[in-house]
Length: 313
Image (cartoon, rainbow, N blue to C red; front, side, top):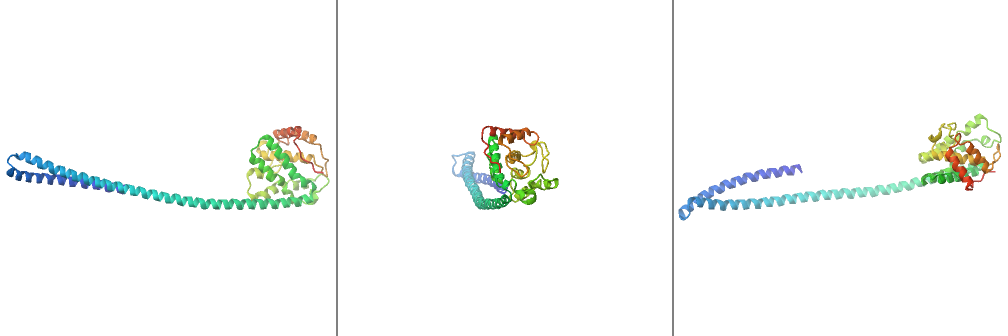
């Protein structure tokens, strides 16, 4: 574009020079004709002859100049139009190329998304099989995951949590104790209270569960369901000693649901409690072990007769 403007300026300078030369030539020719006509047409004065001839020649030169100028302008306009058309064609080619890349990338993205979904389903299916293996080792675990999930989902829906979090609970809740796969049977089935060393082994299962689920690259809330569902509101839980709202909400909900189902279930070292008794105990420990708001929602659900979880026997 800069080169085009430079060429245009050069053309204008050439036009001015040629116009000046044309005017000089016109005056010279006018002088010559005036002298000639002055002798041949005596009725005209010398001055009139010069003026008339000069005017005619000047007008002819002006007409020729403007005709040439108009032609050059047309050529310039045509050149600009052609340049613009070329730029538009190039832009269209780039857009078409971009659209092609977008379609290709879109197809690749769709294929990768399908592959990721299939891998996730297969991995979750494998974990489910492992959980069933654990269920066969422990009658309590056989119902625990699904029953805890049902209570947690009821709490989450009553609290008005966004649908994405509810779906996370439905999807990963049944597997929240998958880390117990690594606990020996002698500890898992022990009929008496655990010794400190044995309890320490049990306390490793949240971290183990988070490690097992990590290959799926789930979101932080999903990981929190595995890692943080044994944290306490007062900071005395494990494995990270988180307190109050530093504990992800989804983990606080799962903690209450987990404790509720444990209380209404028959265990080797404790008798099952009635539903109302379990709820009262959770409410009594609100602000210490449990999130007060979540505990209150559990109590409201029990009062409305909406808790349908079955304790393990």
